[in-house]
Length: 285
Ligand code: B12
Image: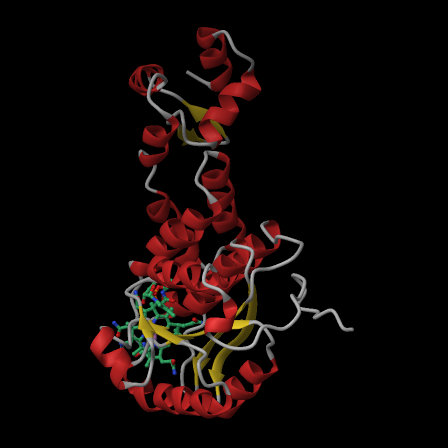
């Protein structure tokens, strides 16, 4: 059946059926320039309709849909998958962590692999678009500084973390990758309501660079806790040996640490300054 025939069978408008297909509620196959639905696909749709939205959402393997577009470096197709996921009820946080994070987890990381470069370039653009879509204006609950130390080029996980921090109504000072220890320390010293410095560490070789950041922070901002995580820091013991106060196995764990800290009175960490707005401006006077 084409979509008009399905619309007749369901007693709904053609555009409604088209939306079911685009949001993956109704399976369909692309034939030439149109969509075709089999009896079996329509049957699954009709029987699936009494399922909860949560169950329907889980039926779609979003990372699997996204990965080929990432590997081709096709931003348009990749963004379409993200929009479809959002439209079908996947929340913004799950979009970053489960859809995009899931698609990236299956990537080849070898240095001669073109896909890794194409995919991470598109993924960074998706993060920028998601960040712009979900930006929260207004007052914030303290600041978290996010960076990756000298030598680290893995930008994605910290860009995602920065956006998720902002989604929670916490200001994020985002320094990016390959940041020298003294720059992290100077940026931290500039922040009046700093609750945490989070470092993304993906290479085992970054251990010395992490220790240098932790040492620089101890001298310029004593009492500001440091959280480390990523594929280069395997556990809490390694994190502690590098001079960090917290470790988390993944970004959800990082957010749990951040939630905990922003809900704790700031004076336990350092002096409280005036509350900056979401753009980072600290009111004077
Ligand atoms: C994309 C990628 C790249 C891109 C990065 C582009 C960019 N702008 O970011 C490019 C191609 C440039 C690259 C280069 C290199 N990479 Co690379 N890369 C990857 C890849 C494929 C994905 C990483 C990623 O962004 N994933 C998406 C994020 C969301 O997931 P994640 O990083 O796993 O993060 C999870 C956790 O680690 C944790 N987490 C991450 N950050 C943080 C931060 C905090 C604070 C916390 C608490 C938790 C946390 O939470 C996340 C899940 O919720 C991985 C392999 C893979 N499939 O994972 C290799 C990988 C990370 N790269 C690796 C290596 C070795 C390199 C290179 C040396 C070259 C190479 N491939 O041999 C260079 C080094 C560059 C440098 N100096 O940093 C290794 C690291 C091994 C190690 N632990 O030492 C990996 C694991 C590949 C491998 N198996 O060998 N890479």
